[in-house]
Length: 185
Ligand code: 5GP
Ligand code: MG
Image (cartoon, rainbow, N blue to C red; front, top):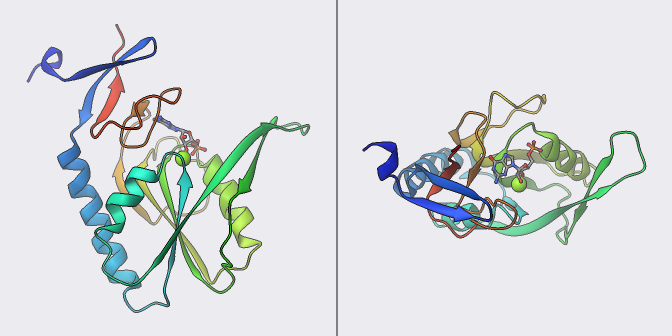
């Protein structure tokens, strides 16, 4: 298939074309779910903690493939311009569960530099969970610069900007069932 045959969508001012079809994403989610099933089957009821908005679709697909009893909840990282030198501060909102002594699995749409996941982990550690791991649909190993190991990653990609399957371009594209990449033309 030459690139001009690929399905395209227009979001705001940019054109995107299919990079990863939904069927491949589904297979990758099955594989990562299988690993989690193996690792957590005999653990105390884990809590899957999705990070809104991007993780909603991944969470839903992942949950259908998890075969042990578990709980799920969502949190949000609210960004605002802080007064400190780094500029942006991210505050964790919406954590209603008592996670003390619990096995927590953070569910992310994408881990890029690792800035957001590091903030989130730091806030969660303060609530004294028994364990924290991360499962992400997409991981950009070429961009990740943090120490915390991303144990469960469904798919690794390069540094391209993608949309679809929960991921947005200025709030559009979250509903797309395939992954799209921007077309530079
Ligand atoms: P971080 O650099 O902190 O790991 O990534 C933070 C956030 O940047 C992600 O949660 C996501 O919202 C956004 N992001 C990073 N890479 C991409 C991408 O390729 N596409 C989209 N839509 N968002 C991205
Ligand atoms: Mg995210």
